Amino acid sequence: MSRDNPRAVKITQAIIKYIALSDQPLSEVENVGFLRLLHVLEPRYDVPSRHYMTDTELPKLHVSVKKHIHSLLQASSAFSFTTDIWTSSVSPVSLISLTSQWIDESFTPQRAILHAKQFRGSHTSQAIAHVFEEAYSRLEEIQGQLNQPIKRLQQDVQTRWNSTYYMLQSLIEQKRVLGVSEHELPDYLTTHQWVLMETTVAVLAPFEELTKKVSSYDALASDVIPAVTVLVRLPNRETDEQI
Image (cartoon, rainbow, N blue to C red; front, side, top):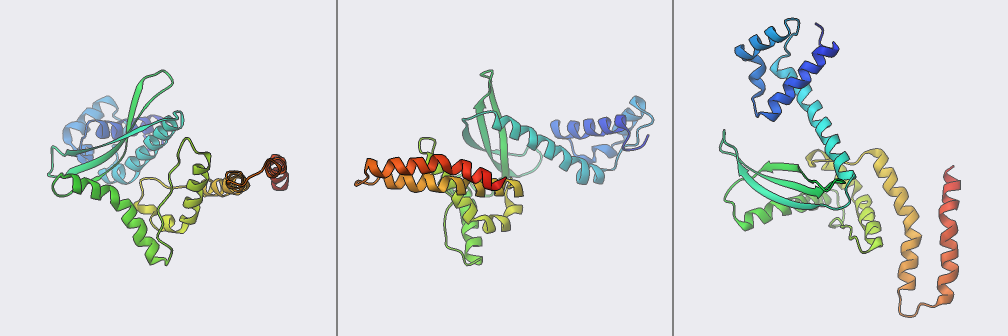
């Protein structure tokens, strides 16, 4: 049975899921008892090597799970985040994780571990705070290496629309920095997402300018009405230009 045979593909996927879900070592595919079991179940199946499972199947499973979690998160509008520290039962290693919780459309509680990393030393409050500050420390380090001003990424605030504009703007400003640290991040932005953000910022910029103008103490209705008229026409004009 060839490796790309549909049945062989399903068996290989089932094996890597079994290893991941039951915390088995990847060397399980070389276990004599496991090999004999598979031979009885499907004599035509050629069990892949441990290196193949490690280098090919495990990354594919990671991508599949990642896409699934993304789809779950996109279906919800509110989340809470918690962190926890846990120690491996098979080795003296502690891990600190970031977990997201949310309620799905059927009001069922859901959760997913978004990231985990090794946690060294004592589990003190100072040590935990230091772990969360490392993302900003690394960001500042790369900003210094690239001779860019030290800035932090802005966060979105649900009650202020222009905070979304500031958040996207800060990401675009740090595009080069984030590109350098991309391999250290649990996730990264695609080229299409960068273009979408840049377009969104360009569209929102006039709205942000008007918001600051009409929020000043000396703003007049005579200033607001013509500005709003221009803004109503602006999105249609930019759409026509893109077409």
